[in-house]
Length: 238
Image (cartoon, rainbow, N blue to C red; front, top):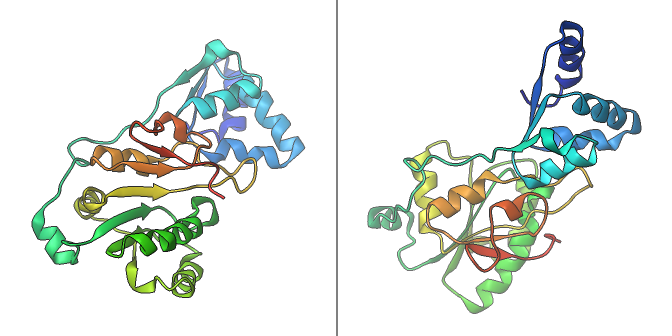
């Protein structure tokens, strides 16, 4: 299972029962142990005892190796998206319903927290609007920074060109927004050494819908976005 919070207990039980055990690294649950020296030491001893360590990409595979795991124990199994759910879906009716027939849509999606870089997206979009007057930014997702981001949009003078749609549970609606966008933008940043994007499913979803991606060149994003091939990598998100 996932490393935190159960791995140390599972490792002890496996040792007692003389059984092999494996763990899957998929996010900051492994990296956040860096914050404390004792917890980091426990984490490293624990993961080194695993029979197999499965990482979601090269970034966490490297983190496991840095923690002292034998490279031969490390496997990479990157997640994917369901092609029956996420695919190009540019229905004219959706464009009409959303009032975007004559709009250039820029899409962003994720939890509205500092690491996701929505403030950077808003600043960049304000510059885009100076040159592309029919551009509209659509943000899917919710979180503690929503009010501050809405205020930022107002301060930048782009409030009427930014839609905060909150969390959308209907996958067909998400797919149509991905497909309607000219590009998908999510310039995530490193908040602390342990708080970084380790993969990013939203990038895969956008690409599956035929939409190019603009992302930061950090963490595990390089496993998904190839610069100048299926998108652009633009620094560290600051």
